[in-house]
Length: 470
Image 1 (cartoon, helix red, strand yellow):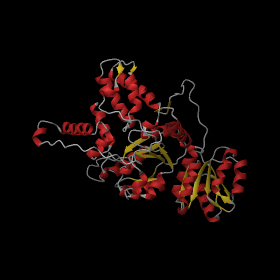
Image 2 (cartoon, helix red, strand yellow):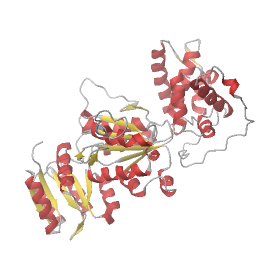
Image 3 (tube, one colour):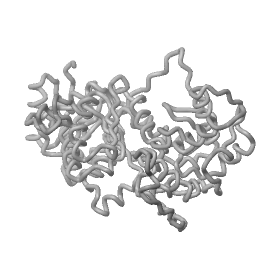
Image 4 (cartoon, one colour):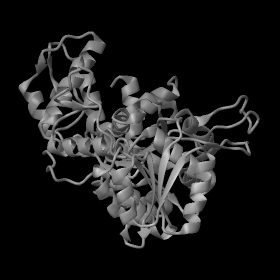
């Protein structure tokens, strides 16, 4: 990439000169300022690609420099440099639009990689590129989402505002609310859209393989490593890495992930060499991450490093008229896949859509629609008759996400005892399907409660149902 023009705003002469020497050796042009006043003057008269900003300056708080950026020449990317004790303020800077932050002492490799990446990606608050003239914006959607409710418009605004930052995004919400869609939307709305989007499910990969899947391995690193593997982090270089079900990650691997986030370097399993990687991290969980930290299952330092930009997705029951929009779009798509012609929903189905509390959210809605369309005989979709789910009073719009509200106890049901002979001739998949269907029936169709009774995640049941087509 071309050499960058860098403004260093740092009152410590030794640190400023050290940064400048490393950057100049790499071919960058560097200017130095010791105060906020001098930095404002420089930004008003010269055009910079990158600003390296200390937060503790003699004439004020470095965060106030963000107020001067709209009037500056060009659109510089801001990299905040902070001490360990100021980590929370660095996160605040990211929310103001900083590209990234570095913790003192800063390694030379980390400094050069971050400055180069920031200059290549562009400024922290870039102007949006318009859609091509032949592409009309969807009035009912946004980068893969369907909906225009106030709660979702707030989510869309957050995605738009943070898309081009390198700030890590932590997405929370119930199972089936669209956490991966959120990650894809952030990627497609950013300047990284031409780079790869790589998703990895931390809960679906055995602990002993997750490190290799994430960071890669070299041939012969362990039994079964018959060839070199680059891993998800390297595969996402220049793009976005989505870590789903992040709270399922083993504590030992959390340490390595934190190291990667701090240094921007990966080390493949079985290798002694470190490699730089330029990725934007988006992670997600359907658990309460603060509770996971409090109970010792998730590292506090990793949580605060990841939770720079929090996005809480609303449950489907909180999205009002979006439910009908989503159901209509999904029904048309499913009908096309199944080779069926549909004309719409019956009056009873329209009422059911609004009255059911959809504990499994969009994933449950999708499965219910597919069931109704496959088993239905007419052109009208009949949800309430063909679905193995029970309508309940709709939850209030201000209801908290499920990871904040304890699940209600499952009603006590006499267990259905079975002997091994009852399963004779059945495959393991058939036995598993029978167990899941009975658990759903005992829970009156409530997938979340059925999952709790089986000791599995609701997403596991939804994935099984989708594979079975039910």
